[in-house]
Length: 387
Image 1: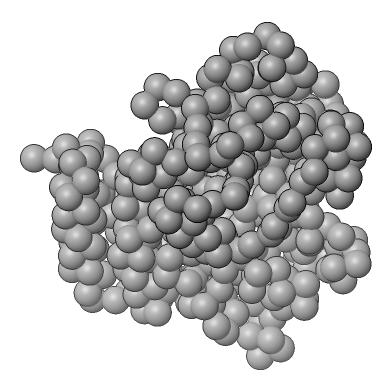
Image 2: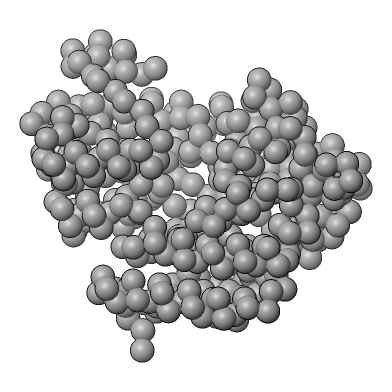
């Protein structure tokens, strides 16, 4: 909806195309590899695709634009400095402008918890499991807890559980999914989704979670801030009026969530219209446009410091996000070049834990095997630093 405004202000004619996550990656890599693309700017998950874009020299460094006082007028790059990290940095150069920040929060039914005697959402894993036991009612097609269970997708939701148990996907340059704390985190996550999750949880990503919540079949869900725009909208969710939002519960090592930059705007190095592309990019990342962002938390500190987001987001939502991002880890995935392959490998272990309610006798063996496979990927890319 901002494209007509941009065309009117700049006189630049914009051709805009929208694709799914997988489609946009396939389109970009196919066209860029062929060297015949007419794309000038694009948004992409750099934390998943940085290596292939970087190795093929497809990303235009933006430093010359950002550091030029004339070209950067109205950009206010200082807004990004508190959220900017290595996700948008390639070989010491800035190759992307962060679109938004992401973290997981709890979405829950206030009416259900109040009926069960809860005045607030449980603060610890022990209290959380007790609540699940209390409100779970599978005989009436109602389930206590919903989260991502599909193999590759599960890493996002599982990450806050892993970190709150004291584990990480990678430690000291090698895979750490088979450590004692990682195993315990998988057992707990698997038990919760197996015993208190809805049917089909092994196929669930964010869209399926939204459907289950909107259908009134779950007491709570843990997923990204992007789900808020759907569940808080009465036209999309019948339970928006009883929607509660809370920080994720504390695990054995406290509350440790993630705060990542999933999407960034980038410029194609092969663009023949870089100056015009920069004006479009600057407009799309402006304070005014980001203030209207419906899903992700906009990656501009100005909007937080000046309380602008309070006009469109509930205090409950902003408080949960603020609590969750204190001491948060910078990613919800393994930080490595072959992250997509690693997601599939580790996701299979998480799936096994869900299938067996965290009690599967092969869980440790499967985690050991996954570690070896991920370590092999790290070695292939020269990123392995283990013994």
